Length: 206
Image (cartoon, rainbow, N blue to C red; front, side, top):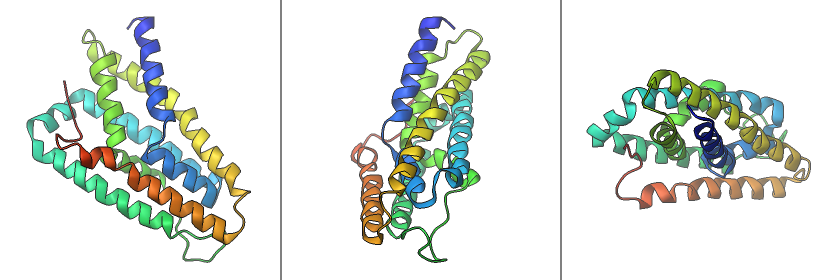
């Protein structure tokens, strides 16, 4: 793999990881509601879960989805339904210390599994494999791509959790906390628009 390819991959991974999307919206909400340390398992689950999915895409899962369009619909609409559920949970979150009924932060396994129904995650994985993984010594290059992507993603998602933690200090009043959570829930729902508006499907494989 050439230095130019690695640089292009790093820039692609940064652009996908740092921009708003379902993962980052949930991370900023988690930072506000629970703080940075309780959000660490969520961040680790995103990074490892996406890495596993990227390897799986490289090993042929993307081709399977291309061959069986019905699986695309399962991921597409199943992921949309789960995002609606998460938005509902975020919207119902109260202020810190508002009672035992408050939701808990997303755990490691839950965050890792969420990558499989995250449309933006699929776009990042397929784009990385199709564009930046040379066919020569493919598996070795796939592992390099996965490692680079994971290293670039880690600080990007930390930024969103840290931003939420910083905002936490400004949202002590319950009404502001509720307004923030409702806003995050609406943004999470808004992230569904590109998925549901694209009649050709979420997953594309070259």
